[in-house]
Image 1 (cartoon, rainbow, N blue to C red):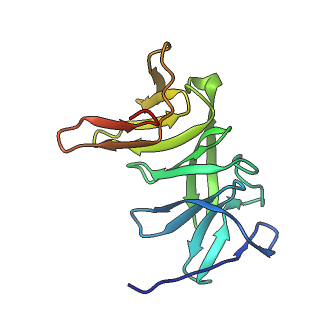
Image 2 (image 1 turned 60 degrees about the horizontal axis):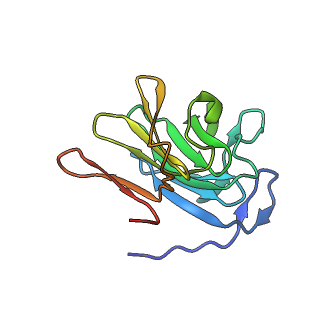
Length: 173
């Protein structure tokens, strides 16, 4: 395969600068998304042949600004879910490289922690949200905490096996 490399990205103000890329996600459409330590979300613009910062139509950045993005997934409806370190989870609808809707879910709405490390959608369309303090499940438009309050699970990875079991990686195994 051909190796493409870019060191600088154009920020929301049109300036080229370096960003620390913390996660890369390829959507079902083939579009590439980058999450950064600085909290900006980039999308590869096929016309410009480079990555551009996602913003709303008025130029406003998503609520992840200045908070690190650790995970990005696309749900079965085509919406993006963005796990933010300290900002919970953002649910974004993106059209033509513009954020047309944004919802934020935090501890106030039922997350186990606002420090989200992993996101995973299972075959039955449930979205599992791994945090530094355990798991939360998004299903039927509702958040449900799934953890033992006596144990502190710092979720590092999530995957579903062929028969539907959810496997969880933590620093302790």
